[in-house]
Image: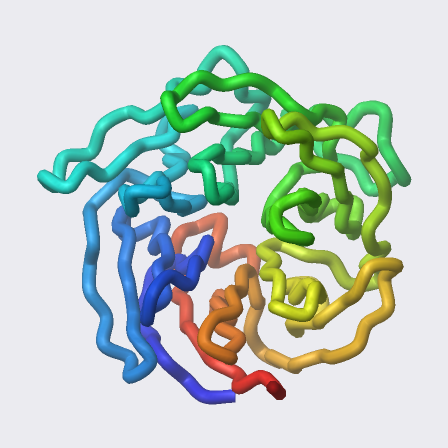
Length: 271
């Protein structure tokens, strides 16, 4: 692995687009990009940004943890509310994935979490935001839904249930609705905070509990593991034949105290 960028406050929610990595530096209240040479730029200052995605015309969508909303960056540089989710969110918002039509799937963490299989008390939800800002809940009873990806040319939605240590899949209908809920992978003893799909249909899982990033395939087989001892991998992205891993230094206590720092490292993937 190779270091790409350090000195970040709390890096999360990476997305590869064009020739650079986009990500949120949550505690620094900014969305940034970094290219393959490590040259970083601040795109926009936003209070506690999290999940990122793009509309078909290239405008940036940003989940904000400061309020239950998805924001939109206009070409003028103005940041406007794309969708107010205060009537649908259960607990705080988190990560997001946006499909080719501009529909955004936003995870809402719920009010509590459980490690029991398919816990009846898990109350996290996934909210679908249409390109025009209309929104509805498309999945419920999820255990702190976190990193999401789309597989099979967008026909399958997969989300990480972090405390329950699993990836859960749904079929996607043409209108964006989700059905056919099923276990995609049991990750125990690891888990997944952020996840990333690769071109072959595998999913890379950033597992802070085990200090590694592991590639799993449907059914749960682990086919590759990259060790990040001494760090907490929180999120990852795949782009340009490279795995980008965003890790926290300082542990959970430093995150709670907002004294942590973050690094971005890269791993070249086999063709």
